[in-house]
Image 1 (cartoon, rainbow, N blue to C red):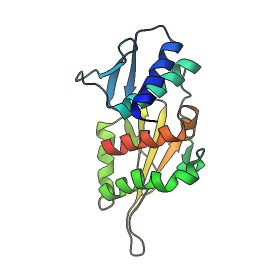
Image 2: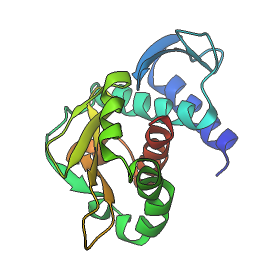
Image 3: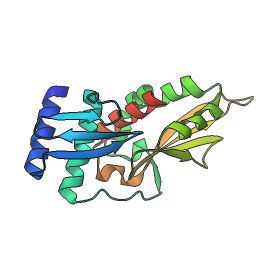
Length: 185
């Protein structure tokens, strides 16, 4: 399904769930104003339309929030991508599109990852040599972990998710969400 079809379906779902014409959502370090009437999502700080992949993630988040009246709070229990429905089969593509990019960018200097906590809704984690828990939505967390190279092994990275993520997003959305976060690192 292309972006336009996914967007059209998401907008249709939003309009069927609420009569409100104006909504808002916080995503990463930005607040967005959402116009269901105009099918528009604008960054509040710079009045720029959200990219299609971000718009779809925001709309899918809002659909869940409107459907269930709330998003489940973060559980604090971290799970691996392979534990998500269909995660094992999709893991090689997920790793290439996300984990390998983190490793490429921060592998030689894992401590640089900590600077992310300064400009994103994130905090330092306690896993690996360096880790950062990023909250793209207030209730949705992902933990980026890094281990430094030693005499035997090169650096390594992993991305874990708060176990509540699958109550809000399907596995495909989780991949897109993770790609967006990794791109912003």
